[in-house]
Image 1 (cartoon, rainbow, N blue to C red):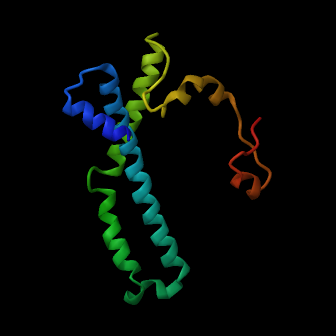
Image 2 (tube, rainbow, N blue to C red):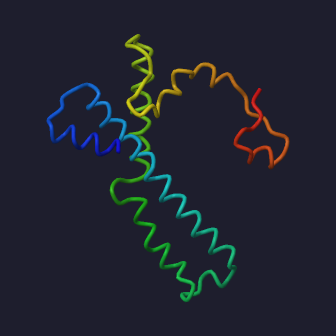
Image 3 (cartoon, helix red, strand yellow):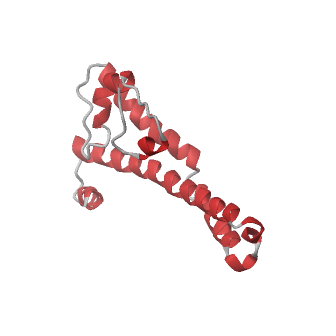
Length: 142
């Protein structure tokens, strides 16, 4: 729905600050999501291959085909490393915005609003005593 809102704004020639920031935020989310998906698939395929032992290299299981199809995804539509640099630049621009006293860190889709609490986040520690605690999304913070 947010992307549709953005597209309608483009069609209506909306030149507002919100429209511009919505475009920047959608672009940053896309730049972060594509590497996450393609690298996760790449690692998943490799994990499956290794779990099958020597059978992981047999053509009949199609793991090689999956890998051949997925590897280019790490480069198509922008190299993953470059896309993550674009996301980093977006996040750093918000930190600069805050440091220059231009206001709060608030984006239309609220994906960067957590940066407003950056100081307390950086001061917190995450400690766990077991794998189970680590897997618990609530975790234990001190």
